[in-house]
Image (cartoon, rainbow, N blue to C red; front, top):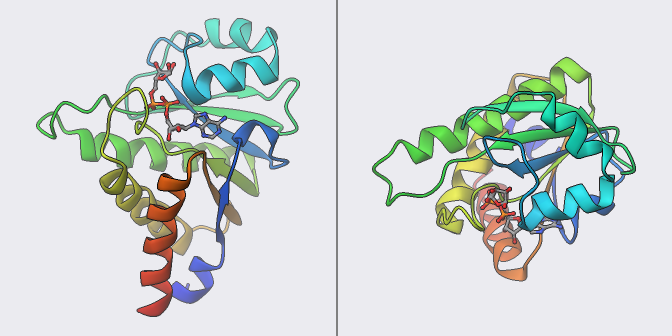
Length: 179
Ligand code: AR6
């Protein structure tokens, strides 16, 4: 698939991922899959208490992997819980683990036949991953996956703050320009 066609399947939104009407949203979860803060806390609050019960049955999830629950009270049908790495200065394989996290979440969308999926900026909050580096990895991994897969048809990067949104938008601009 041409880069131009692939780029048009990626959309940027600034806002709260829990409000999106998509087939699946991705959660920036922890390896124990227990309710935490940030986007994880917001997703648990919006999905309702059944989510914690469903997560408890999954037996955790290793860093760089992703597991699925229903969306419960969310508009999204599914939640894909992806576990990003904690930033340790770049010496602990963090870049590959973050790429794996996006790749695994995308594989789950294929299995679910989820046509639309929204991602937050995984690892860039409590886990301290530098935002610009994380954004490059997110774009690269998603572009590569979409170029050889028809599902998901659309990926939304849902950025909570304007700084993250601007980082993603400048990468998008460069990609569109260079195309
Ligand atoms: N919608 C979209 N993005 C959001 C939202 C929201 N409602 N709320 C926050 N963000 P973080 P991590 C952004 O800390 O770094 C939890 O305790 C936020 O601004 O949520 O992967 C988990 O249980 C930031 O850009 O996730 C884990 O223990 C991005 O989401 C740990 O934090 C990710 O920030 C995971 O840390």
